[in-house]
Length: 288
Image 1 (cartoon, rainbow, N blue to C red):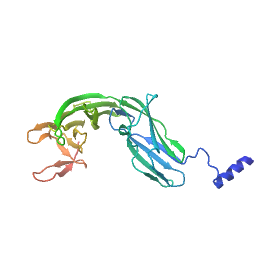
Image 2: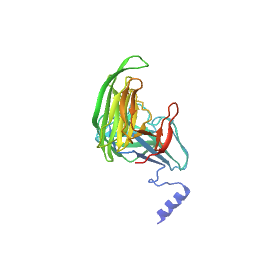
Image 3: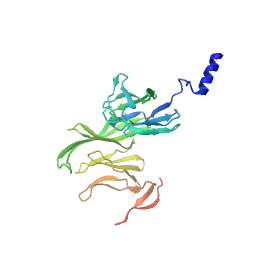
Image 4: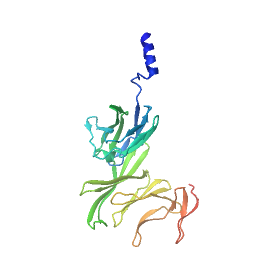
């Protein structure tokens, strides 16, 4: 009884802090747990400051470490790129959420089962998050083509391998476009181009400049059109509805590859109508 009283008084005076009370909370989360090889794996790291004082991270690049283990035995090495490339300021009793791309920061170059944990160092102590498991798969190649084009900057001929890759996920099938440089053994991009439906097939064409055009049906009447440069830069997607006729990719001598048919819709879900010499005009709400 006397010992309990002494500990209670010590707590009131701030001389003793229970070991279970951490000064910093660390959590991690992902948008899903299954990924296609080489696609971005965007990890969110959440920090909770419970120390009662302001905290500054980023004076060196060793304050945060992401431990990634493949098949429970193989430690995945980093690429040398920083996990977080800016200072982090945490006021007392505040939180911060940071994002990082694991495909960019770590050598996740093989399919398999991985486990991820974040560890943060602060004043000689290490605070760890829970461990999150993920699965990385090769996916199923739906279409592929090798194409040579002339780089407009270097004026040299370069080769690219283009692929559409599908993955069976918990919430339906996913489709990504993957572009590789086989000579330099680089992956230029692996970007989503919409869900893959059981009906219809995605269209893919490559123009003379090496840009990949993909028209993918994502619902009974809905299509998403993606353009991705040979350097892996994707333009803002455009969306089409099959109203009087379904959209399709065609090749024009004057305009290159474009979408013919269907009706384009804007971000607000309204059909866009075009007048010659003018900008698109929103006409009416879309209804199925």
